[in-house]
Amino acid sequence: MELWCWVWKEIMKEADWCWDKMNFKVGKGTKFRFWKDPWCGEVELARRFPQLFNVAAQRSATVGELWDHNSDLGSWNLRFSRGFNDWELNMVDELLQILRSQRITLEEDLALWKGGKNGKFEVKEAYELLISHSTLLFPKKGIWMENVPSKLAFFAWEATWGRVLTLDRLQKRGWQLPNRCYLCGMDEENVNHLLIHCTVASVLWGIVLGLFGAQWVFPENVKEAIVSWKGSFVEKEGENLEIHTVIYFLDGLEGEE
Image 1: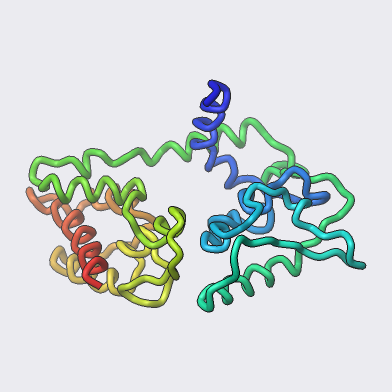
Image 2: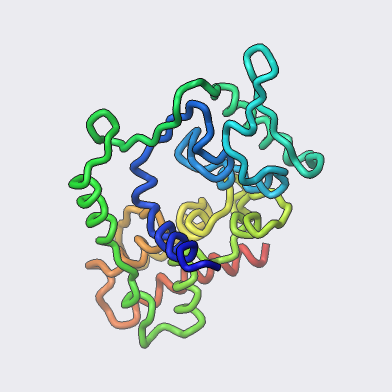
C-alpha cells in the first residue's frame, strides 16, 4: 500500500465525529458512492443493508452510476451477483421504499455542515465538537483490574471496542444469515443491544442493580456503561467485578441459544 493511501486510511478512521455533523445533498450523484456514503440518511446503505451490500455487483459505484436516465422519469438500476433468498425480500423492499423518494438532478452534489450558517463549515464549531468528542476516553481503569479474572477483563475490552462477534459483525464478514437477536428475537443484534438494550439483558441488569439498591439510566453503549459504573454505588472492594460478570454472562446466554 502506498504511503499516502495508508495515511488517508488512518485519518478516515478518526473522522466519524466529522461525518456525523455533515449532510449530503445529492444532485448529479457523481461525488457520492451509492453504498458507502450516507447520502440518503444518517447511515450508509452498506451498513444499513449489509446482506444486500455483500451481493451487490457494483459496491463502489457512485449514486449517479446506478441511476438509469433512459426511462421518462428515470429509475434506479441496481445489480446483484445472485438472486435473493426469501428472508432477504423484506430488506429489498425496504431499500426500494427508501429509494423511491430519491431522484438525480442536474445540480452539483453538496456536502453541508450541520448547524453552520448556510451549511458552511466553521472551524470554531468543528474544534468545539472535536474537543467534546474526545472527553470520553477509553475506560482502561474500569476494565483491567486486579480483582477481575483475565477472561472477563478481555471480554469487557472486546465489548468496549465493539469486537464481539455478534450477528451484525458476522454479516459484515460475508456470512449470509438473518440478523435477529437470539435472546429477545425482536431487534437486530449488535454488541450494545445484546449487552445493554435487549429486554433479556434489561432483566438481568435489574437484578444486579437491585442487589446494590441502585437506580441507573442505561447508557447508549458498553464504553459509557463501564465509565458510568464507577459511580457512587460502586465503592466496596470487589463490586466492580459485577459489570464484567454481567456482560460476560449475557454473551454466554446468547452463545447457548
